[in-house]
Amino acid sequence: ADDSERPVPFESEPLTGVAVVVDISGFTSLEISLNAKGRVGIEEFGETLHAIFDVLVHLAVENGGLVLEFAGDALICFFCDGDFQTGDDFASPETEGQNTLQKARSACEQMMASIRPFMPAIRLHGGVARGELRALHLGCSTRSMNGDSRRGNLFVGSALEAAVKLLDESVKG
Image (cartoon, rainbow, N blue to C red; front, side):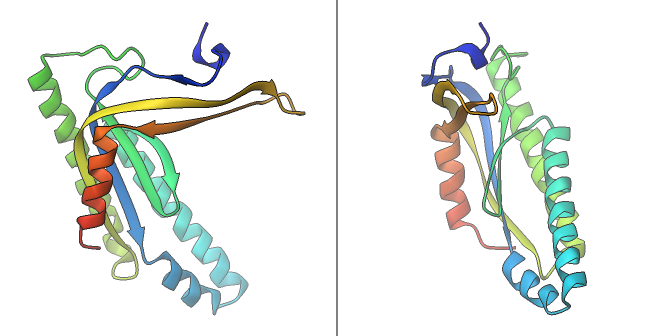
């Protein structure tokens, strides 16, 4: 059975790769200044917010990353060594690890470049770290009234822990 049919909770096999946590600063002050324009400003803020996250998600995926989740105004991605679906390596661990780190770095560089038109109002900072990632699949097997099962994922592991630590230590912008 596929994972949607597995009883919860269960833990995925560990994946090795690179975690990227990108935090966007400046949305609150931008929202306040645009809200002063009234309805037009509120719409402009929504469009700006959507445009920024749309570009960041696109760049992560285009460079081989998987968007794990959004945490407030942060984007959490993972670049896996090998295949996400099977966990199989495509090359030697050393070569694949270097390729994965390069993909993550490329995505980060492109993300920083994409934010330049919004600076200084909007700034990025983040953390990038190599290690393991596991998904804890949580929820219940029962279906809600509309037929959906209530499931969620919690991502843990050394890569994510180290990337968050580096995010906390990084300078905004």
